[in-house]
Amino acid sequence: MAGVSSGPVDALKNFHSGGLSVVVGNRSGENLQLRQAPSFQISGTIELGDVPRGLRTSVGLMSVDGRGVFSPPLFTQPDGALTSSAITPGRYLILPQANPGYYPVSVQLNGQEVFGKPVDLFPGSTIRVSYKAANGSLHGTVDNCNGAVLPIPKDIRTLAFGRLLECRPDGSFEAPGLPPGDYSAAAFRLPINLADLGDPGFLAKVISAGTSVSVQQSAVTIQLKAIPFPE
Image 1 (cartoon, helix red, strand yellow):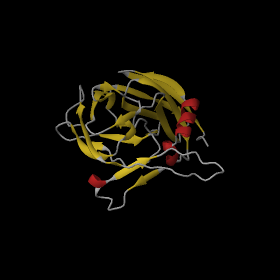
Image 2: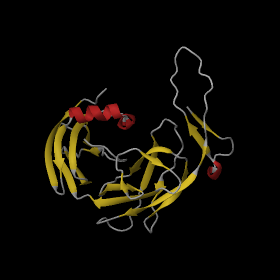
Image 3: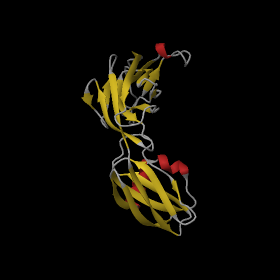
Image 4: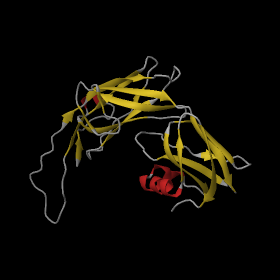
């Protein structure tokens, strides 16, 4: 259960929110107390490592304590600082975005490594996200390809982690700039429902149906056969 204060949505500095876990049975719940907390500013920095300068990315904050609180992402500025954002105290996953050519390798909260772990955010919290260049690639061919290839990492800990690759007329495909790790690659026939790509259950089906492949900082070649899109 969650509650927010009344008032204009753009007045984030006055935004209040609270959360309360409730088990609903065959009796009325009574004497429930929902305490609200004021929002505060949180910011951080990006460490690019060997990634070319000028990277623009975002860091998502996803509530994991059932409050469903609006938490806009933190966006990278030219100097490597993350924009401040008004959030409320609570438990979150910090989800840095990955894109072709670079990937997050570390998320630190107040100097402690928390990548992939739920954390409590309070006033004064500071985030530091480190990136590395992704030099691995996956390419190959698909027999009778009339759809697309999906390489999905088996350990998903961040945002924008997958690719949807089109086959060329000769059945070949290529995915440059992949982070190192273990993947499951599957070639699907048309039609493909793009809305399913955000469903964890669907991603589990892709991983189960695909071909296992390990990608490091070099090129990997595989051959696939097209299969029906999972239902």
